[in-house]
Image (cartoon, rainbow, N blue to C red; front, top):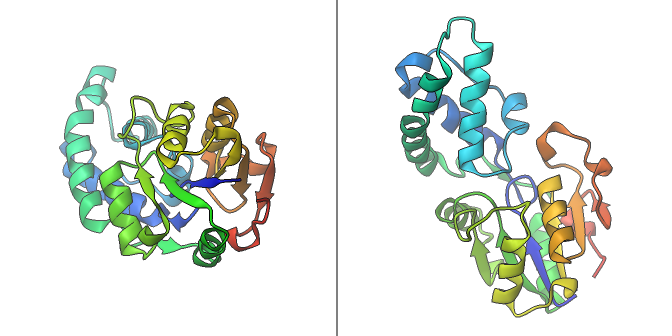
Length: 227
């Protein structure tokens, strides 16, 4: 390998509680849903496909599951824009405050850098949030490039973000390892022609991670030695 592309949420940083806090603050701002709340289990099954998907999924969940909520499909759709604005504002404020770096991440990244590999962070989280989170957790110095879900025309699981990241790193896809925590990462890597390893502790939309088509699995970035 010449380079490694690393996912962020669920791979390097446990951000689940950041999402839960920001989403519940968002719901509290919406008069029609001010009493609704989402829990960790619900959010864990919806993160990973970008903020737009996350917000739409949460709005759909609470309007379908809350007995007191009686909104038409059009009314739910109309909630997206104020929900988006609220979520962006709250997430920017709390980004990283309820998040923890997974054990072994710093040591694993240090090990990869020591081997002369070029590293990039590629996430579906908005780039602004990703850069701020990496800096807050002391991880920004490991990466030559950081790209979020708004950096390219399409998000993972489309292969475009991986191909563009390989291009930015100056590495061929078949010599660039993708490390992630979900089927999104694996599907994108397969389509781009990148080898892919998945961590076993991430989110993966509530599905068993070892059922995903990948080249390998690891319980810690520290024990990742396929390169």
